[in-house]
Amino acid sequence: MFRIAICDDEQIVCAQIENCILKYAKENNEKIDTQVFYSGEELCKFLEMGQDFDLIFLDVKMKLINGIEVGRKIREEMDNQITQIVYISGNDNYYRDMFDVRPMHFIHKPLNETEIVKDVRLAMKLADKLGGIFIYKKGHETFRKPVKNIIYFESNNREVKMVTNEGEEVFYGKLDEVFKQVAKYHFMYIHKSYVVNYFYVTKFRYDEVTMSNGDILPISQSRRKATRELQLKFEKEGLI
Image (tube, rainbow, N blue to C red; front, side):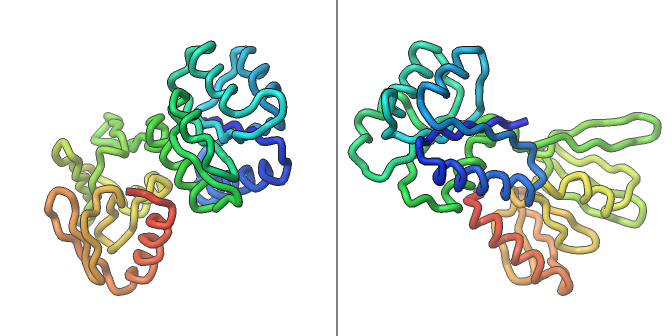
């Protein structure tokens, strides 16, 4: 579970950020938990009780304890160097004050959904919680492979070849079942015989993709539109 805190004294801003995150989580089948705080004091009390978050969207200008002070408490008093912080503000006058807090990003009001999603994605990458495990069987043995290491799958009759950055594995299975396991990790079903990991595609063309290992794989005519739509969706999210 990836945990995100949203701290802003404007309820409408908190609702906007939370709605963006929940929409993203639903569309991508990601397990994300959000918690909203309307003051720096409320967030600090929660953290002092031993609770923590993977990412905090934190308003700079709040009453009593502002976002800069909250950030310093997190980094210095609580010695938390892991939680990612994204500052929110309507002006640029706080850049120097933020330096010691080492925020991951700074976003401006009015907020943009694309920026919020990009920051969630980046924080999940940094926390190494974006990927998953692909499970497959060979004979009576079960194997596990980190999804982030898989370049693509190729189907040949009843066999599936899994090409990874460590080599190749062949096992019996159906590509449809493979895709069900990995679809939420940004894999693309480009051809009846190929499922590719978007993160390892180095070049998109109308009818083919080039993978990081140099392999060129075809995009079938029936899947070109869907592949192009997924490509644009992932690019909009700021994936690299």
